[in-house]
Every structure is written in C-alpha cells, then in structure tokens.
Image (cartoon, helix red, strand yellow):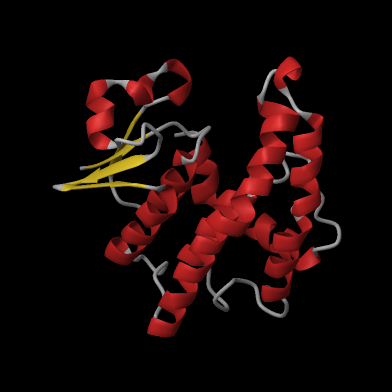
Length: 201
C-alpha cells in the first residue's frame, strides 16, 4: 500500500488531496515537523532533507510534494493526467511555476501574519510578501480567462498542484478582488469533495 508521510497542516496536504482524488488505497503515516518527527534517523532515510511529505509506493521513495503529485497522476490517472504531450508540458510548467513564482510570497506572508507567535513575526516581511503576491496572481488570472481550468474544461493535476499552493493565500489574508478568474477557480478547486476529505486525513 502507498504510504504518505506528513500531516494535513503541511505541504503533505497537497499529496493527500491527490490521493483522495485518485481513490487509491493509502496509509497516512503521521509525521510532524513540529515535534521533531522529520529529524529522526528512520525518517531521514526516507527523506534526507528532513521535510514532509515523502511517499513510498512499493520500491519507490519520492520527496517534493508537487513531484509526488505528478508521479501519482501519471501512474494512476483517474482523469487527472493530461491527454496530450503539449498538455503534459503545461502541467509541468504550472507545477514548477507554483513553486518558483507563487509559493514564496504566499508562505512568507502566511508565516509572518499567522503561523509564527506574535513576538516572532516580522511585519516588514509580511508586507513585502503581500506586495509581491499580485504579480503571480495576475499571471494565473490571465491564464484562466475564458476557461474553467488551467488546461481547458477539465480539472487535472495542473489545477490541483497550483490550487494546493494558492489555497494558503486566503489564510494569509491575501487579496483576490482584482483577480475574479483566479478567485472563482480556486473556489471550484477547493470545493471538491477530495479536498475536503484530505483536510480530515
């Protein structure tokens, strides 16, 4: 059986969502960075970076949440893997984009507005993250003009990977009012039953 290491309140949520969409049996091995669970010798043999998530599927071990999701969608599909090579390229593009352009301003804002204890928050860093967020948001909003999903009509791995990163933006208090396409798309994605199940994993 597939084993997914992590907890929902971490980047592991992205992979839990994918597993729920695919409907494949899996075990969520609760591994929490907050209590040192990612620094044990046993876990470091699974993911030497000391982060969650990590995945075991038979003899294969993977880390990096969006790479795990691309692998799972490619192997188990269930309608989430692109139907053409061109769309495969776009799925890779949007997944890499989510990590290189979107995640950092969202996470920086979230950490310094919400996650850190009040005394450890840096208002300047939170402000800087919030000021950089509209650029990737605008790119996403433009890409969604006239289409319900990133690759066309159907929800797929590109949507899941980007939405799993973007879903932290409302928690950070980031503003969506100037991006109605992205706002509506995120609402569609995070209203899916698999997303709601993954939050309870």
